[in-house]
Image 1 (cartoon, rainbow, N blue to C red):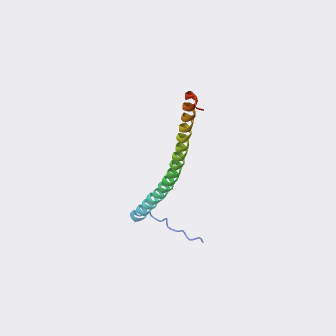
Image 2 (image 1 turned 90 degrees about the vertical axis):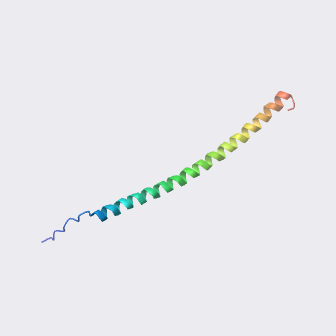
Length: 70
């Protein structure tokens, strides 16, 4: 005959522990998300800086062309 195991009641302490675990998991998720965001932001800033440099170079080329010094 198979023994019937009692269903474990979810006590207030266990519920709080589960809630805290869920919050800690959310914190870890958001830390990872922030790290990814920071990396993507840095990449975007580098691309903007590169494009600003290219715009400055093209502006100078246009200025020289318009002045006939090219």
